Image (tube, rainbow, N blue to C red):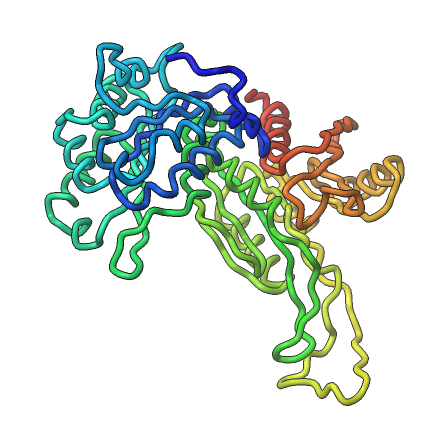
Length: 416
């Protein structure tokens, strides 16, 4: 089972990150119409470095072509059980086998066969070999909701879970038990493959902007997207931590974390201090960009637009310093975002914030440079610590940036 090293489809490897670089993903594709999403799921994994090898049932081949999946992955596709025993080669794990098996989409038929140890397709044989070898297996079902609700199918889903298989339960819509999003499936695979070096740790993360209302419908805010905070929440969760995310008013993706939604800076501070007072956290990552100013007087109803409006802004509370005062034993990582400063000035500002807030580390970045800042998927940062060190992290995906900062936290604890 050798793949061409020059297949052009592999040009996308690691375009988003290197989180699973060098990891082999065996992807089972079954005969649900949701298999039309399989090429994009495979390529999503490749963009994070995964080497994807596809195994298809005959029913799946009637819906999408094996040639399409070979194009998507750059690897030959297993369509039959042959004397090469491909299912064993992939499912056994180890140096040549897969690091994880993803079956997506998984039909009711395949779920039930795997649960009962029936091996009559390349996908079921792959699953049996992987489960027996201790290779992680993820199953993402897609089917009519009536099939999902069948007592035997429900029992077989429970059997799979009891075997250690992670079942990515579908979302029900229009009478269908639909596959969860491609992004969520990719994240589940990444999480399975990340090191579990934060198991047993509790992490609090803040994310996104806050708002201050000038009347009942209008508000001031900033352009924070929440992407950095979500990256920390995803990475810490993937590495085994118990995570709480306090998020401002932005969309939050599916997370295996406790999520607290807030709107104002005061609400965010109350939620953070409540968590730090009631629960022992090992780490607090203050990645949110709460407003520095609040509207002094908000008007009930809607302000007239027929005449000028003067707003008086007052300083908003500083959450960072209060967090450290509330829980001195928690390692607190703050952020210092500036605009248009040279490196020396940026580091000087960050050092002053580090000393003034009492936190343990400060992550400084400049929002003015291309591919950096609030709305970008990538960022560059300087990480300052109380010991006087300053580490430059060059431009990279925010998830990788979060991972490197978490590595610094673990080194500081002496856990790395």
